[in-house]
Amino acid sequence: MKKLIPEKETEKTYLLTDYGRQKLIHYADSFKAIARNIAVKDTGRETPEEMPGEESERQRYLFFEKLHEEKSILAGNLEEMAGIMSQIAGEVFAFRPFPTGKKRRIRQLLRAEGIHIADIYYIEDDDILRIAVSMNTDRKKKKETAEVANMLSVILNERLIPSVDSPSTVDEFMRTYFLVQEAGFSILSGVARAIKETETLSGDNYSVTETERGYVNVLLSDGMGSGEKACADSETVLELMEQLLEAGYEPKVAAHLVNTSLLASEEEKNMSTLDICSLNLYTGVCEFIKLGAAASYIKRGKMVERIYDSTFPLGAFGDREKNGFCRKLIDGDYVIMVSDGVLDVFDEEEYGEAFLNLVRDMNQENPKEMAESLLQLILFKTGGRIRDDMTILVFGIWENK
Figure 1: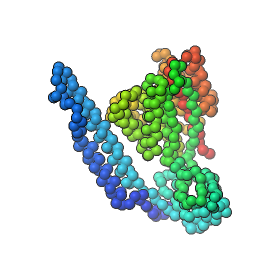
Figure 2: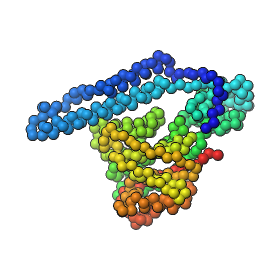
Figure 3: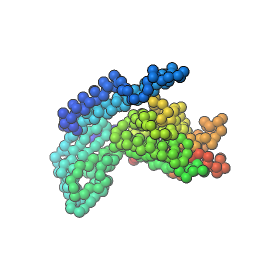
Figure 4: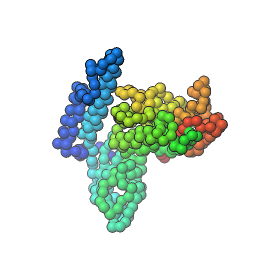
């Protein structure tokens, strides 16, 4: 990717004061030390020695197994917190002012549009061009941030778009807006769903979110069972995932924290699957993470690859390694994610290839139409019977030209 910032000495500005950074580092070191030497305090439960009867040895074993699991969960969470603190403490933005002549020209051109620029900086961030602009408009006038980004794109001869977390409009109040280099790819998604015939709510839920770092995270969760309880369980999983991803956690780390949260909860709950597809819009690299989820499919013309991993749902076990599968997607590829109810309509002997063959024969270019066509074929196979919730989520990737 082309780097547009001139190769000159960079002014590096910490996001935190030195004192604040040092405090975070000390906290992180403390959490790491605690995680290494963690000891679970007495919870007030009976110890195995106090348990009478013939079951005492078995109860002793179960007690210490539970104790070990709780210690592992707590230690893991402390390690994750320490890692995030260290990452925040080390974050640096490298600001570089625009050349004086270019800044003057930008101010003149945008002032003619009623936009006042207080300052504008390059922000060096790996290979992605970012620009910080402090600006406002004339009183009671507003401009769409995307419109201002288009103006600067023309002036700088580089396609810029507002960052995900920038305000959508520029108004009379002076604010700092962040514009980023447009990603190399964009996606369009579509979904088709069918609810179990004895229920009014689907236990399947999905989410498509974009982060400020140029990732799109597509999530599909299938609550075990069906109806209101399954729906609530899968909704809880997605809400927690969205909050953690928005806070900057990596998908694997976020999934680990959600899993430990469910294990620690004392509420009666059903387990939920979690299917994660995390796509880097700048590189096209896509990571698939599956926790009890059904297979996914990558369609490239008539070639189809099945992505599958045999894992347990969330809330089943703690301290598990979550494997990921990385694939490089290209212009015109489609990813198809499904819930278990879709694949369960096939007999065991045809389970592996049957749906793959259906995907191979799809000719639709619109993801929504492809998802609906696949669902209709599945319902035709079942004679219209819907014995479990079904969700088919399709997204296509296209190169921005």
